[in-house]
Image (cartoon, rainbow over all chains, first blue to last red; front, side, top):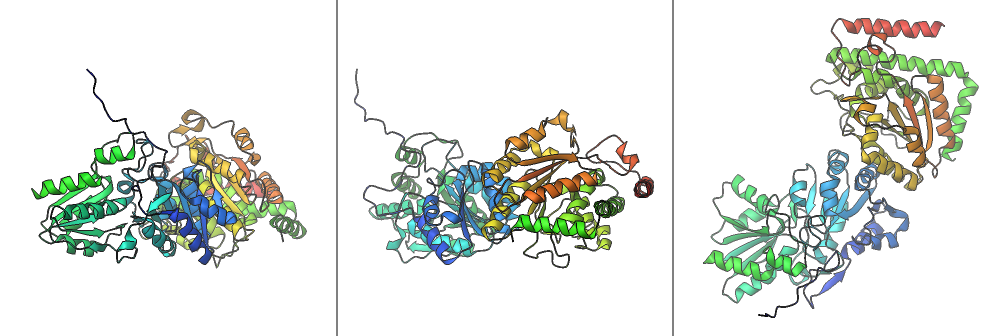
Length: 330
Length: 302
């Protein structure tokens, strides 16, 4: 007996694009934003740990070779040295993959930058499930790790607009920051909404009477797509984008959640320790008796494979979001 | 003026006004006072890393009484050389050196390790004037020093950077990442000083994790490497002079490997069973001070 099956999708390059076919994108928004910020602030310097090309830092390196420092594949040195540079008054942006920043170099970020509250800006590539290489490269728990670090600001941008607007604000803010980098050809989504990135602020992108999505990172793009798809099912969905995970805009999010609508959080991160638990803690602390439904990656080591397959498998594709919401609404 | 020329001039000026012996005597006197401060602080606290402080006092004196450019009244002076204490638990010795240097008042040393003190048990930049970094999580200092050296050079400063680390920190991989980075970036104004007291928390260094051959390791990493008796002031100063003479904005980083003796200067402690955290009974502190002074005065009059 023989059955015909579709050919299996292949794991693409290390950094697979999650942009949809034909979607408007912007090339290397972080690199270009850093160059622009550096033209206005001569204290800005760039560092990387042998991942300049893979974190869009190479754009900065080409523009400012004298202000770029290659630290080699040595993440403890990368972040220790970034702290030392900040001690001398510079404003470092130091890039590597999120897994290496969060898992390998934590102690160096915590004690060398966060404790003295230095303006060190961590730029982490491949946040959440944005590579098919498996747990060695998938930073599914980076926010969970970093949220416990005092003084650290955490930003999970949605698209190229968020990144372009966030970079100068990260440079201007005191203290250390962590940016969940989207690199390469990054979707441009938020220009269709009346939106600007304000560090520390959540913003309602669209209103809706039946459901409210609280989302961050690339999941805001998926949330907007899912909201449109749900409209076809006569479900009216609001989307609130909360790109700053810490400090969290509790007031805005609680006001949106404390209604009769179904509340759903969406994040490209483990269900443990990320946006969902940030929201849950705000809800409980405020004494709001409200159920919140998480759409997040499972608390597990994820499979290797092609991103579309994995996003579908772990429930963060538009189709799975729509199905989940419809099931919740019964 | 290049840093090297300046350093050489300072050294030359030194020899014009004082003889080499006078210089050694003067810095040795500072080391004696640092040891004395450390014993007093240990007594107030009833404990502390007194053994390490005594062992490292000559290194600290060589830095603060002879090498480092600083302004005691303005610890944040931009042109200062940076001294980074990587081994946070050596803070007792560092505070003593800061008092000797006039950066913190001697009377304040009595607050060491007390609630609300600016002098916590483990050194932190956020607490103490003149403390450049928060050490204590071992293996951090040299990485931060690399960044400071890069940052200062990038901004046109000729200030030198000294990182004090211990032989125990040579266990940490990050130390070697930084050693490679400093050589790669040719940080010629960076000097590491390693206190090799051959003792770690769990015992003798060669039983915990063998770090030897230490000299060859640093040489292989491309550093200008010297190894000296870290309790011999003349040898120490010669090594620091050599390091200063070859210091440059772009050039080889320099390391001074200092073999020291835990408890140095107080025979009672030198002979006691070596421990990371040395027990000293209440009645012994005065005896320690007397032995320290007797030894110092005996040497001074010889």
